Length: 284
Ligand SMILES: Nc1nc(=O)c2c([nH]1)NC[C@@H]1CN(c3ccc(C(=O)N[C@@H](CCC(=O)O)C(=O)O)cc3)C=[N+]21
Image (cartoon, rainbow, N blue to C red; front, side):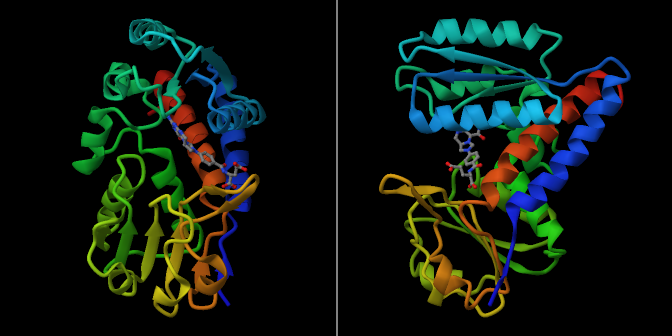
């Protein structure tokens, strides 16, 4: 049976380290500050935003929440971002995605100062990551890398298979694995014979957003499985992109859902905000 990679526990350790660093910076009169902007009232987004608030409070990070109505104009949102870009208390700006349809998402992401882009979604930060000189790394892929590190998984020369090609997870996590000297295959819904490709993976990273699309029997014996999917089925149940029970009979280590990658995502957001404040303090 596979070792369960306990994202919650790894996240708790990192959050304690972050809290200590925030205390230390406080002695220099610098408090990291995060602005979270939520447009509309999507219930899932609300839950995520309140989790981020709570995590900030526990780490000693100042946070400001802007809850704007669903019919907020693009112009109003751009003005708020401009104000936050110039606000000295704010080290990080996060605009919760998805945005309502009448707002151009890339226009908004490009308005955020790359120096405050703690999500790592601005094309400047995407470019820095792609060229091997990252400023802010996107939180979910960064969390995935921290989990691999926590189980001492060295990627050098390994076959990493990433399923899913989103800008938020699939593409950046592939780049990060490449930077760690893995051989990376990036596949997606149109990949021919997905089962065969998945079967080659020493490390499988699933980020397609389809409940249990990846069957346990596809997985190579001894593989490490990182499941980024958070799919709500029915009222309450959360499942990943991987068929967990069957996969854990073949994998050597596997992340659960919930309690896997999710808690790491928020942790890396705190980490990026702390890093940004360190730069403001002239430390990095
Ligand atoms: N600008 C932006 N940045 C984001 O980072 C961002 C976003 N927009 N939009 C939505 C996604 C989703 N996301 C998650 C964060 C934490 C959990 C998490 O902690 N999940 C818990 C379960 C929570 C639950 O019960 O729903 C877990 O997996 O254990 C999941 C998903 C960040 N996102």
